[in-house]
Amino acid sequence: MAEYKLLKDLEVGMLIAESIINNYGQLMIPNGSTLSEKHIKLLKTWNIKGAKIKSSEDELVFVIPAFMKKELRDRVLSKFSKLRYSELSTELFNDLIEMGIIYHAKKLKN
Amino acid sequence: MKLINNIISKIDDFPTLPTIYTKLNEVTSDPKSTATDVANIIAQDQASATKVLRLVNSPAFGFQRAVTTISQAVVLLGFDEIKNIVLTISIIDTFKDIGNSNYLKPIDLWKYSIAMGIVSRAIAEDIKVESSEKVFLCGILHGIGKLLFMKMLPDLYEKVLSYSYENKVSTRETEVKIIGMHNSTAGRLLAEKWNLPPDIKNVIKFYNIGDNGGEFDLNIAIVHVASVVVDILELGSSGEFKERSINPMAFNKLGLSNDFFTENLSRILAEYRESIDLLLILDKK
Image (cartoon, rainbow over all chains, first blue to last red; front, side, top):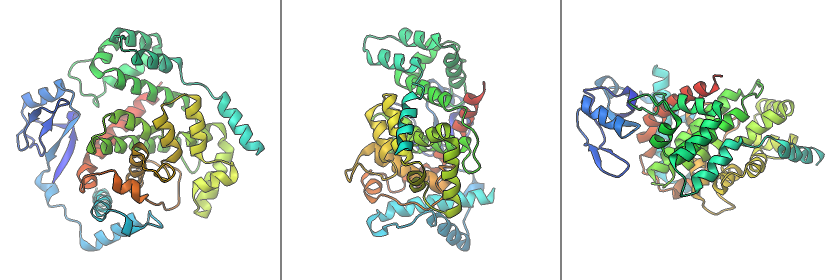
């Protein structure tokens, strides 16, 4: 799992979860790098807004129990009416609903 | 009918966007303009200049050293970004004295609009739209008609909201019933008066439906799908209390990556929280 962090929240030692590219398409920091002081300076110089960071172990074990998942799914779907499911791209729609489930589960957890 | 004519004439009398924005528009569209020309215009408007500097020095922009002059800000951010910042400041200023409502707090409507801007921009970046900052503005401004109703017709709009809330019916439909027009129609009239770019006008008119009379339109589709995301995440409030639909053409044709939503959730939330802080900065006198 990876989490997007804004530049001000990046810290030395964090693990980069997705290569960082500047506006010109040049690779700045490759995926898998450990952030150093120098990296952070580089990002500031290039005004890069943030980066994807590998989540800490604590978040890796965050699993939504099945009963809760069903409840949250119903909650997300209750926002819609007259949806023409067959016409919506299935994979993308499932991802949309999954996003809602993850968000509301984390909100409940906190 | 009388009411509609009354609204149209009220929109006609509505304040224009501050001259600073129209002047900036002229200067930034002239290829011979320099950063100093742009900076001079902003510096002439002391209130805007202060706000621009306050924003640029907030952590969201992440500059290493303090930005102390407007010229520095223009060079660091570029013409387009500065212009968008000034437009956002101007619009927030125009609507700053909206009275409170029992059903829709102005701050929640702003939060909703900002979330719309952020999600729209994230979508634009995923599908590699060239001007993602313009898409950001489309997202922010999509519901300008609601702000207009709340400012021009506070009592009547409160009736619209309370009726929709109590009866669990669509606020949009109640708008037509009680006021005689959708917020999108009113918003578009204001956008025309303000001479906003055609893309933004189209978004205001059609974001809710998701297409332009059955035709796919990129900006409209982006903002439509963004509204689906913001509704699911319950960021701020749009003043709509009834379930909604999704336009399949807008949803499918954008060409989003299949894991776009789960992949971008944490980024959207991080940028949203940051922007809410910026909004509060702008709100300070």
